[in-house]
Image (cartoon, rainbow, N blue to C red):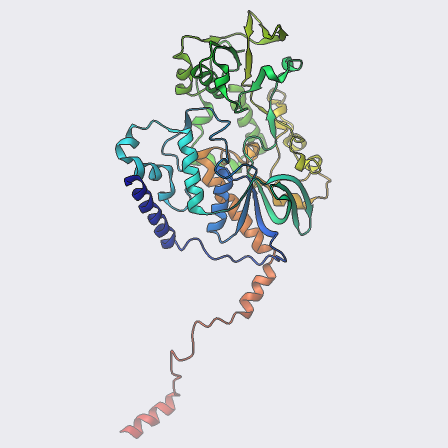
Amino acid sequence: MERIEGLLALEEQIRLDLQYLNLPIATWSLSNKDSLNQIDVAIIGAGMSGVTAAFALKLRGIDATVFDQAKTGKEGPWQKPALMETLRSPKHVVGPALASPSLTFQAWFKVQFGEDAWEKLDKIPRLQWGEYLQWFKSITEPQVFNQYQLIDIQLSANGSELSFDTPEGTKCYIAKHVILATGMESFSEPNIPDFMAQIPTSYWEHSYAGSDYSRFKGLDIGVVGYSAGAMDSSATALEQGANSVEILIRASDMPRVNRGKVAGSPGFTHAYAYFSDAQKWHYADYVAKAKTPAPHGSTLRVSRHDNAYFNFNSPIKQVALNNGKLQVTTANDKFTFDYLILATGYRINWFKQTAFNKLTPYIQTWGDVYTPPQAEENSELASHPYLGSHFELQPKTGCDLPELNKLYCFNLSASLSMGPVIGLIPGTNTGAERLADHIAAQLYLAYQEQHLDLVKTSTEAELLGDEWQAALSPTERMQLTDNVE
């Protein structure tokens, strides 16, 4: 009961915080909406990025409609497919709070569990972060349509025509602006090495598959890679009773220093937009090639098991299936597994999302506009979208498709163009506010003359005419004074 009362008091404080800031303001858009299916802003994805963007727009008087393919309460990766015990970010991260400190995870946690529990907390538990985001959504009240799968998008002068597969059949909307807040898998797919080409999928999966690891009890499991995902998959398999987990690592050692973490200052976050293309590429290429270590706690979560084995200098040469077992040959050894988990990351695949197949050939990528020095060649970076300064997709040179710049890539594939303001919790607020400011300006400019007409034809009187009395001329006042005498 105390927990509920504390949360109710916090929610009242949030209401007061917004009231003191005169937020959210009234809607002001003049967009033509001849039907309920015409909207100013559509947000595809109701995870952390999507609901934060919706809140940022709401604070600016803009109504957004959010669509998500998942059921209510299942949005985002926090229940599945993520496997880590805790977030990587520090517990005091602000995240999507925006207009009120009372909206932070820290405030939400403290009113329920107390100051002592907060002091003892090391990192935010993954599932608890998911609970917090559901609470955040309930407080900020975006309009969300769940179980809406985007299946087609057509660009027109009137806006983007969006088609969704829903439990009630196909539904269509026309949106002036579309925010693609579709998370890690937006334009990406698991990076599956060629050595798995002939192996049936019943014997392996990608580390981000989100499957039930309890089925690995008593089995010998191989995990390819040494990333955070590799550690999470290995630990989860061991905790679910795997007989053994062999971690196959190409390198001779683990990377030790998180290079990207050093750059995480507000100065870097805001300065990134001013970097030249060469500077953005150089930074991203360096961090990618330097490799990011798995978190300390995630690695200890694996190594505490006696049946976990870290195999270095073990690039895979061949994988074969023999009598229901996987025979894996590395540079130095041979292993026999019941199942293989590939923690091999993601790669851009522009044709993965069928809804964008018609637009994909026209979307500009970094490979279209920038040629790096030979030492910095990176085919993965070259496939990233080359965005405008406010997350806008851009058409390839010579392509007459200006409507593309009303589609905003608000997901991890924007990171090369935009920096650490999307997909990562610490930069979420910065990215959402930057995007919301831009869309607010564009919605106004689209009807600038009409807004000016409202100025010219406004009739709301500030003064009613009875606040003063017109003065007599000095002469009349003198005569009046003489008469009185």
